Length: 254
Image 1 (cartoon, helix red, strand yellow):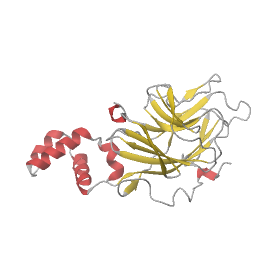
Image 2 (cartoon, helix red, strand yellow):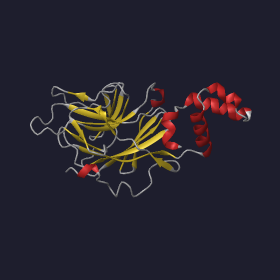
Image 3 (tube, rainbow, N blue to C red):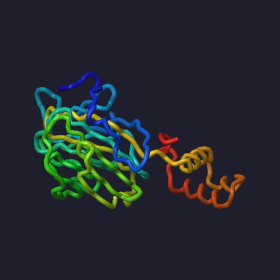
Image 4 (cartoon, helix red, strand yellow):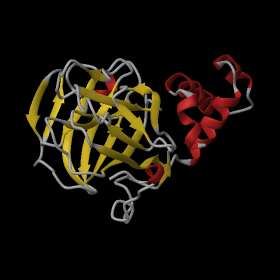
């Protein structure tokens, strides 16, 4: 059942700290109203997504939506709550590049996330998908209120899923080799699917990371680093930071 403005929250999902190695900061991304299938609707807050809502046509294929922020570095964790019991051929949670498919029409009911090399997905039936291939990963989950967590570590290149805050184990590796940002994604073939974004966070940056990020924001060019009255080792580290990090991605952590 839909909730007003998609503001439903799960006390169970928020009762414990997320599976992060240290303290965390919350992220503010939502579902992208411009990055979705027309067979989806978003709540006003853009945290809830409703699939195949046409009362006449119902489902004519597979619909997807991606998050408003893509990630190119660091660790990120978010949670998706199933407001209704999952059903149909496929309801999926995962990640994909900006080229990942968001829709399959003409009554094409498929596992959209993982159908090619542009996305990685977990089906509620317990299989994980990538490059059109699947393997058994966990037991199916059918209950409403189930919370699936997604942990992406782009330093190590790993993707791990959680069910109600319990790790399901490593699902994929090699994501650090993907040359473009990875976006949170969900998809469904079934009318009545309702998914809600819960906690979204990343590890709290260290003091050194905060300082380097602040300096990187204030320097327009890397060459200007040599003009700063800093020890040579610090200047070298700041140059490396500007090469390896995108300041826009770090804004939420400063």
